Amino acid sequence: MHARFVFVAAVILGLALNVRAADIDVTTIEPDPEKGFEILTNVPMADPVLKIKDLERLWMVWEPDARANAERATPEDRRAMTFARYGFIERDFDDTGLPLGYTDDGQGNLVTNCFSCHGGKVAGMPYPGLGNSHHDITALVTDVARLAAMERGEDYREIDGLVATFNTPYNMAKGVSNATMFAFILGALRDPNLDLKPSPTDPTLFLKHNDLIAPPWWHYKHKEKIYCDSFGSKTHRAIMPFTMSPGNTGEMIRSWEDEFVHIKAYIESVQPPKYPFSIDAPLAEKGHEIFNRTCARCHGTYGADHDYPNVVVPIDEIGTDRTRFDALPPLALAAGNMTWFSDFGKHRIDTRKVGYIAQPLDGIWAKAPYFHNGSVPTIYGVMNPSERPAVWKRNENGYDQQHLGLVYETAEKVPDGLSSTERRAWYDTTAPSHGNGGHPFPDQELDSDEKVAVMEYLKTL
Image 1 (cartoon, rainbow, N blue to C red):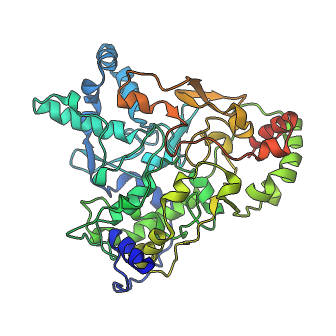
Image 2: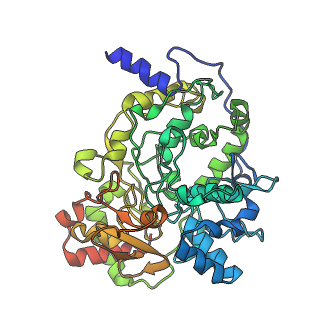
Image 3: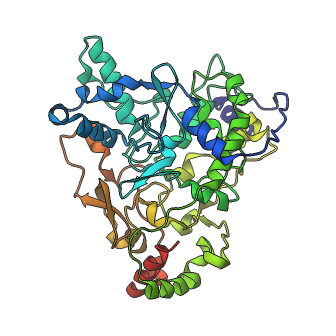
């Protein structure tokens, strides 16, 4: 039975056991971070998502009240509404007017790039490399489909909450995504050498959908392994699975290897933003001492004595939502060691299941919301488990300097009568993969004054 399951898991992921394509030499070009940024923002590597001209027309298929507000608005305000609805971030380094996370394909279309998830903003300021805690991919693909239906003369209102291949949700709440599942699902369409298969098999038979917040890229350089459960190797090929759009051939994906050497170099060059508000220096110094005594053994030390230990905390000890932990069986991870992305096992995926990595904390003030699933809107909530909101909705650009994180409103439950897009704006911690429990350590080791001091110190990182 065990051997049969190994075979089934491999076939589902498009990875035939004991089959290995010809080795491909790993590139040895000189990494260039600046070139990596240029590639990210200017080289299309995915299928088109929408037409550039549709950025100014999507409002026409919004909910009645939202559509009426957009119709009355100035073009500038309407654009701001559009960016807010889909979580578009301003691309402030050129004058194209395009969102940061999308690239012009030269044919009037926009394709996603890595910044769609890893280009965010805090206090209204864009930060390439910060996780995008605003985006709503489901809203975008749904409204694009609605606009196309309207142009065909069909009733676009019947289209709602679109999903992807194998009935896969893009995201179940605004600001998070089901991204890691897409790597496996897109992999099911391909053989070990990344060429498309004629008859893919549904991998969701044994994978669990789960929402994740995209981590900030400035943490990447500290880690020995990538992802919140610390299984991925730190190679340029390991960050390429999201190039597996169905329209890309295996040859196309493999041809971008050199580009991803530069992209990886850019990711490693990203630095955290400095806290822009006031800091109580004596209190922060007190917090530094407390932090080093209680928190550093997992999260590391910072400044001149910088040391990040890469501690993976067992799942029963950390206690945070375990859906992601259970979502990827070891056999599914092992199958990844048979593909081009791992150089057919030369750069191995770690199949041991332990828990979640204690993240680095530099730039932590800007990372909100917190935990791997984005379930806690402020550092105060991380430090005070009993005060974490159960159902909450963030505002667009506010920053809470007292609690360090998002400005948000709460409700006893998600309000009734909302569209799917409006519902996703409310983060419901009772929903699957959205639990906000766990990380009880502040209550176990710190009193209320010590928590305040540690929070002040975190502003300095």
